Amino acid sequence: MSIWDRDNELLGEVDDVILDRRTSKLRLVVVSHGGFLGIGGKPVAIEWRELEYDAGARLLRTRKLTADELAERQPYETDQSGVSIGDLN
Image (cartoon, rainbow, N blue to C red; front, side, top):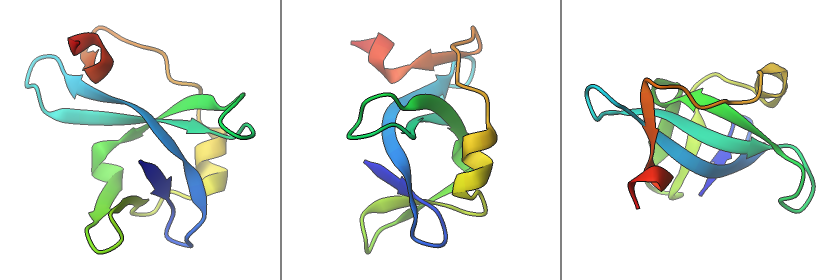
């Protein structure tokens, strides 16, 4: 699924979803940001509360986060407080 900002700029594609290990609630969405044709993007985490689902368009949008702000974030690295949906298979 794609994630867009409020100005309809594509921020990236969802690579993973991270659940809180303690509560099992959705915590982070990991986005591949930058790169070209899906190659070379860096994984960046966006907190779930920073996003909203646009049911009409069937996509995720950021509430306030811009493309420039996302580009400034450090690459996502796994931690022990969350579990990747990919790890559940």
